[in-house]
Amino acid sequence: MPKVRPLTEAARKAEAELTQRQRVVRIISTAAESRGFDRQTLAKKSCMDVQALNRRMRCESDFRMPELCRISDALGLDGQCRAALCGAKEKCRFETGYRAGASGA
Image (cartoon, rainbow, N blue to C red; front, side):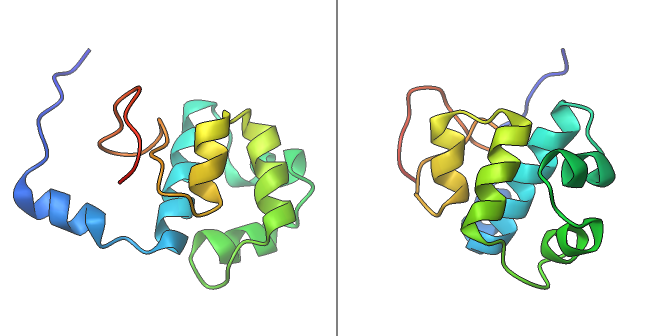
C-alpha cells in the first residue's frame, strides 16, 4: 500500500471550503470508483437517467433526496456515509481526512 501523506495546511483549507454539493459529488464518485461503477452503471442501478446523473455530478443541479437514497442503496453506503450525503457534518469513509470513530467536521 502506498504511504499516505498528511494533508498540508493549504489542502486542509481547500477541503474545508468544499460546498455541500461538491462534497456529495466527491463521496459518490469515490464510492462508485471503489466498487468499479461507471456513471452509466450507477445511473442504471439507482434508477436515474444518465444525463440527469451527469448534470448533478458536474454540480449543475442538486441531487434530490430520493435520488441520494437510491444512490446510497446502489453503492451499499453505511449510515455515516448516508448522513454525510444528506448534509450532516459527519465524515464518510470515502472522504479525505476520515478517521474511524471520529465524528463532526
